[in-house]
Length: 166
Image 1 (cartoon, rainbow, N blue to C red):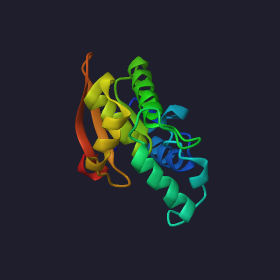
Image 2: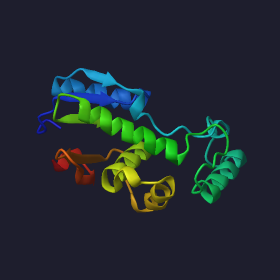
Image 3: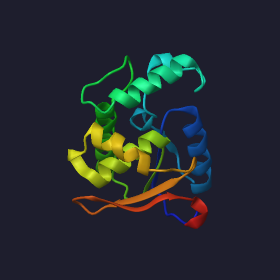
Image 4: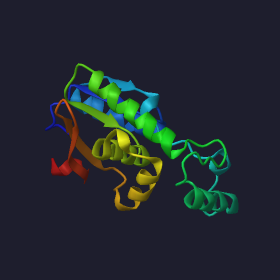
C-alpha cells in the first residue's frame, strides 16, 4: 500500500474493517473516514449470531438462494439485492463527489462484489443479474480491487489482487 499515493481513506463502520483501515491509515499517514455506505450486506435477523450449520441459518439461506433472485422478494428484515445495489450506486456517487482522486475504501466481500457489479454493469444492473454473477466473483478474504473513473464510466483495473502485488 506504500506504493499507492493515497489521498483519502474511507472505511465501513464495522469493527473488522475499521481495524484494517486504521492500520492502512497509520502507514499512509491518513485519517480514516468511516461511512455506513460501505458496511456489509444486512442479513436476515434469524441468521445473526448463528453458525452457518445451524438449522435456522441453513433453512433461511436455502430460501434466499431459491427465491432471492425474484425482484421484490424479501425473506424478513434483510437488505434485498436491489437495496444492496442501490447502496452501492450511492457509494460510488459519494466517491465521485469527493475532491480527492486516489481513494482507498475498506469494505467487505459482498459489498465489494456489489460495487464491482455496479461499476461493470452500470445503472441497469438488477438484483437477479448481480446474484447470478456472484458465483463468478471469487474473492480472497483480504482482496483488493483497483478501479478508475474517466468522467463517464468506471474501469476495473485489478480484481481480487493482493497488496504485495502492487
